Amino acid sequence: MGWEIERKFLVNGDSYKKSPFKHITQGYLGQDKNCTIRVRIIDNQGFLTVKGKNAGIKRSEFEYAIPLSEAVELLQLSLYRPIEKIRYLHNFKKHLFEVDVFQGENKGLILCEVELENEFEQFERPDFLGAEVSNDPRYYNSNLSLLPFAKW
Image (cartoon, rainbow, N blue to C red; front, side):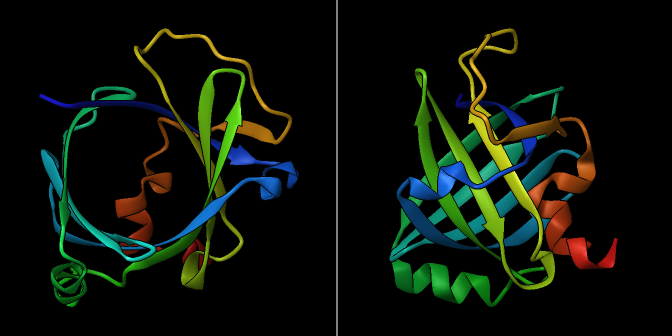
């Protein structure tokens, strides 16, 4: 079984903008309290992801590459409006910090995620890391698709 262990933070500052970036569009095909099914296009590659129920900052995750044409078709089946964002990949002190600059109805929201080996792993914080929002469900991407930041 695959596991995702990540912490999520608001972003202050823009020093991450010197990092490489990718364009992401993602939609949700299924969502309930036990499972989320997501389709995502990162630049020109498609992915299908199944995520299990959150247990703190840990949850099961299974991700599969799919043809771009299928990802485009699956996005049309999205339950809510797809999310669009630019993701900066910022390497800092042995960790990859993924900074998402949201577009569309989530414009103005900038979040950073860092994936960890375990729930207790310590890491050094880059200067742009703000308040932690790991346990605030409003900031889950699936919830941002349902209730965008502009409507808070």
